[in-house]
Amino acid sequence: MHGVAETFPKIQPLQAFAGIALIGTWGFFLHSTRQALGTFGMVVATAFFAALVWLFVSRGWLSLGDTGAITWVVLGMLSFLLALGLSWSHVEKRVAGTTTVDEVN
Image (cartoon, rainbow, N blue to C red; front, side, top):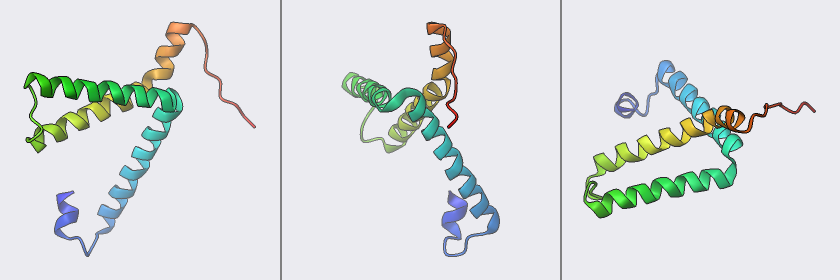
């Protein structure tokens, strides 16, 4: 990010390639998570993480004034949400004993 900010009006080909690759990867992860958990599941997981942050702030373990700590907490929780979404089909298959089949039109 800092490399792009320093040369912003001029973007190098490697920076453009890396940025497009990152955007595509994020899109894939978000789509897979939404497909696995559904909208309701994502809302419940987000509400769970928000309640966890609320607990940390109320206990004094986390200060809302410390933007660096908040950034790390949000990134960590986002990574847990994406990991849950990407692995949910495997967990559901194990618990329910079912198989996952893709529909072909």
